Length: 146
Image 1 (tube, rainbow, N blue to C red):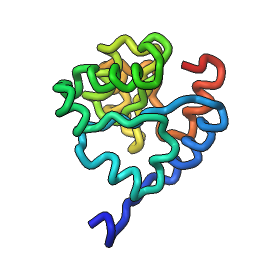
Image 2 (cartoon, helix red, strand yellow):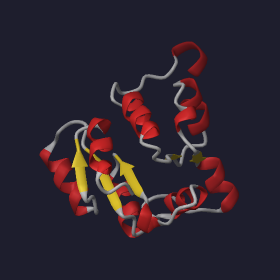
Image 3 (cartoon, rainbow, N blue to C red):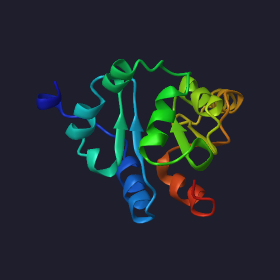
Image 4 (cartoon, helix red, strand yellow):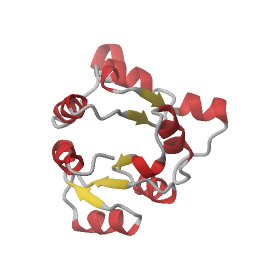
């Protein structure tokens, strides 16, 4: 399916990742999917990430899934950082909760549908900041730079 249909990405993703790269913010992709690498490669986004922690890593390292913070903690370690100096960006409640439980300096919830109930739920699960898309992320990091 990847070869025939490709991968659709949100319009804000590539510009945000490019801006983070220009800001010299190191980035990791974290996904429980065993197909994350293939998806990122098909979307031509893999080069924006300094490391990837995916479902294959989770299985090999026996890491529990979200809302346990293990996947994010592994990614922070691979980036040479600590949770106290790292941000997590998530669009799922379990991922936001994982970032909160892991003690990450900044947990950003994405509310792409601009749903007030989702915004409240993201905050209740530990998001410090809720954004409608990734466009505002570089500016949010500009001053504090986790």
